[in-house]
Image (cartoon, rainbow, N blue to C red; front, top):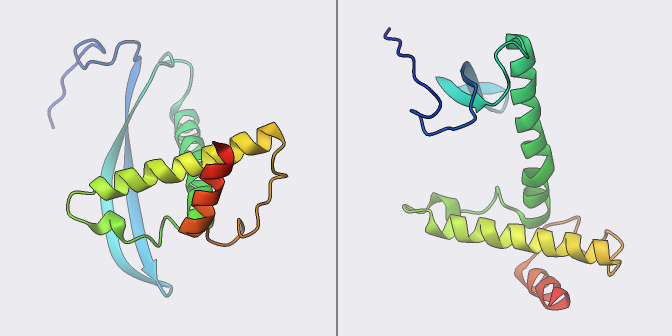
Length: 144
């Protein structure tokens, strides 16, 4: 193993105080059986001073970040707009997937704007089940 010390400026990350490597082991399950296993390093950077957190504290922060991502925007995008069921992400260049992700975020953002304005009460008919294209267009038109 080789080790090299670099400054945050050398790495293009001004303000960074620490680089963190986390070893991950992941199992993919299908019908309660392991069908695939992966091991890899995941790398993180932080502006926290090195003595501010121990290893367990940093790991808790990383897990909290991903928990917020998964339970925040991703869950809403999947439960409301069927993001995980979309096959568009499996196209070779993924340009369509980026466009659709942007549009899904736009729809959710417009819904939140309408809630903030008091135009909806937090529930739109069909919102709890997957939103179809017509519902999304109606939501966009109401927000305009």
